Image (cartoon, rainbow, N blue to C red; front, side, top):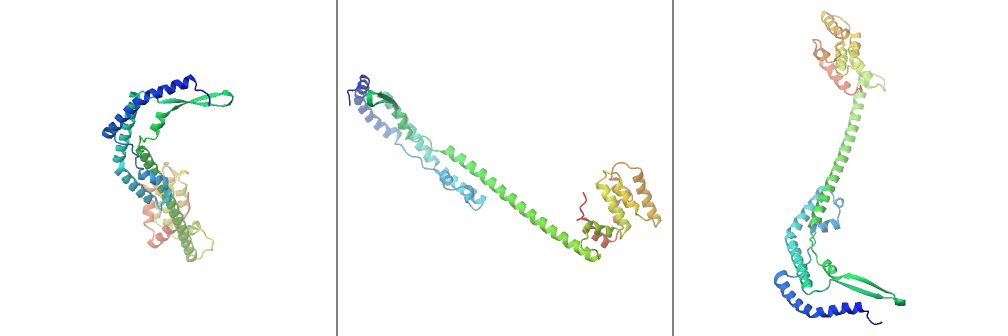
Amino acid sequence: MGELSWTAKWELGRIEEAIPKLRTELVRLETALDEKTGVVGQPEQYAVQKLCSQKSVRSFPTPSAAEEAMEKAFEESNAIREKNTTIVATNLRVIQMLQQFVENARIPTTYIKYNYGRQGKTTKEEYDWFAGMKQVIPVSDGWGTVERLQKEWKRECEKWDQELKQKEAAREAAEKAEKAKFEREIVRRQFVKQFDLPENTDFDDILDVILRKNKYLRLAHYLSLNRSDWSDGPSYAETGLDEFVEETDEDREIAKELWGYVNDWCGDGRVFRDCKWSYGVLFGKVPAELMEEYNKVNQYVDRW
């Protein structure tokens, strides 16, 4: 190795001059650290951080189990927060004392390292030793991370819980639909057998059989349809009246009033709900047993 350059000699001289001051300042700093600052400590890792590093929300059997685990971890974390805060405060004081020491002793916080290569080529690199030293002294306990992890965990629990509820709702809906389909078929077969109809008779045809058993029922049925849908005017009411046989004075009164509303259409199907011979009144003239059959079948007719 060749002779040091004048720059290297100058740097070395600065360090040699600072050594006596360094010894004195070290003694003072040691005493000050013992009396005022304490020693550098390592904050204890929070239980929330441990939980999130070891498990995920969906590694638990249920969202509620995951929520309970986080609640417990957060409670444990909060119990040591004060201790960790004290450690961080002490570490910050240590850094402050070191900073003061370095400044008072006029110790350079950086140094230059020379690298001598072949063919006389020399390179130099500057190192900040003081910044490097500060990096090994913890100045944060990670509580901000704890709060962030807790919120993210909670959001994931809520998302998972919602997914499970949606799946359960879909399962229940499918089960309900299957049950309704089964019950619908039972009712259809019951009336097919009762009325001695072809095996493939659908509910529309079964309903037509029931309606023809009572003229008041048939008329009331079509009036109620017009109450729900008058997009085609009084067409439903007209269909009901077309086959209504007038056998008594009351029948003639019924027909006269209702044909009046059909011929002088007001544009609102609710008129058949509110008139004297409304569908409600006409349904009241139907025997109870027949009404029961009508209601049972009518609910299964696909109309709109």
